[in-house]
Image 1 (cartoon, rainbow, N blue to C red):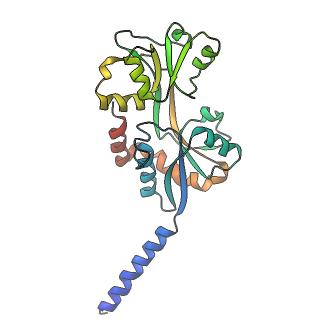
Image 2 (image 1 turned 90 degrees about the vertical axis):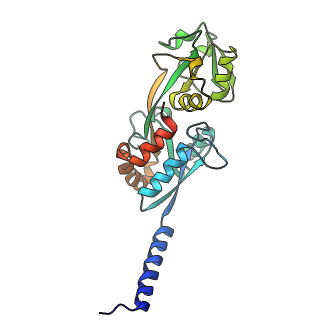
Length: 253
């Protein structure tokens, strides 16, 4: 059978149309995030950061859904969940933070990556953390509105003096200027900031962290189909070379 130019063109346009149709048919899914800090969001306006790269990775692996990272403040996330209007998934969270330790209220994926909250002080005035009460005699710095378990309770009892500011970067500046004695910053954020400012040698990291946890994706029970699509991707994410390179860019300490 002779393949004519006309037939080749028909086949070409068929595949182009087929591919285009498949792309259009992907179902849009919002990937909500509320951590407005590096490395998760490094440039909100231009949509850059680890959380944006995560959605890009999902898009390259999923044939059914199209994922888009959307930043929303935590209070609004809580309101959407309460009103059962969370029309998407929530990235970078842990079951304990949403009172779902048994993982029955929502569907939880495998771990996207692990993280921990470090207790930071100055190297010339190092503080070793053991429990919240070990910070009682020091001035503690926190991000306004952030809850630090054990610490908040002691602040309420006036056993810890807490000074708040707007960001983790501001907390490190306050440490350097000796306006505070200690603070708590996630390892991922502390590593990202100090690696770029090249001032890590100024700080002491307690041998015992304030907390260790897994960052996962939370999915509403009604969105089981989305969960079943992304869980195999995330379950195997440690073996994904592209993801490994992404993590090295943001989290290599």
